[in-house]
Image (cartoon, rainbow, N blue to C red; front, side):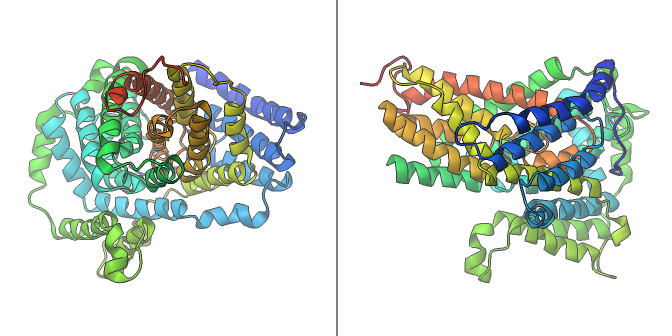
Length: 499
């Protein structure tokens, strides 16, 4: 279960050719974007930022180099092209997401060392693991239960990561030899963690920002149950379909991958679980520490009232790490903490590139060009609705921040709805449901970055799974706009034309 920085071997002739062509392809795309005549309203720094990010994206997908090397190249290019200054680039290592990644793996190492992760994983396999498909469903249900309780997506990922790693190992999928089960397991959890956050308006802070914009700019107050009755069916149906399609279409499992690959089968797993005996003192300590962190994650809205200060998710994890590493009374020594430093470098480069797109205005320019180039005046509601939902859903590929996407996109959508003569709620609320669907790339969200470090899937695997998830979401949202949302009074008749 050690997370190494070794480059994953190409598993097919196609992947080998992608690696050969990816290196010159990234450079060519960089030069084309960099030396194109500037578009209307696109600054020189925005153009160079887009060129740098495009090169990195090609290299991350094709993997001619380890992903962390590409991130280092990206950070250097951002400096020499004068897209970002040195301080802005280096400061990304101090971002909350970087610290949360580091602290997450300290807590995960605690669960692994004490064998609590193994105990929980063995129980999960004994209870649901007769077939791989049911083991995957168990994780879907687990993420569904956690989503309303813990708004922090990274926190949910940290909690369940040790279970994923151990269950993947039991089904024969390791970092050195990942198989289809491991891909399905990691990517299903990746999608569930993000998509199921759209079930409630408290699923993320970006959702609450969207609610505020809808009320202040659109003149409609969205209540908790209003959001839930439109968001929950869409998110849950999408993830159930991905549970099926992931196994049947994207990553088909061989017969031997559909059962636990330990000698003796489930009976041996059951015996191993029983042989662990009652909880050890160290396991009880690990439970107490993790329960403290979990409590702080779940009660963040009360912190100011209780403590006079808000203890954010990274600082709650920091407190847990302090207790875990405390001399004599803790559980781990620093050397025993399995921290993937290469992942932190990858994350730093990814966020430096994403912030450059935001800061230079390249991401906002791209979104405005998408809407500005479309003449939606006089078209049926359903056509305009489909365009708005599609742009909002796939816009997460342009910027890594849900908050930035919300602040850029929602005002544009609300203004567009008014200009076309439609109720702003009809566009804005369904579009707001797309905020949390950051599943297209490993750099799209914090859980994506953490799960990518397990080396169980590639960037292209993530892209395929994420794009299918988003496309299903668009289809379901469009169907819902014509039926369910219309019956609730949110959207007008699908083929009606604004007066």
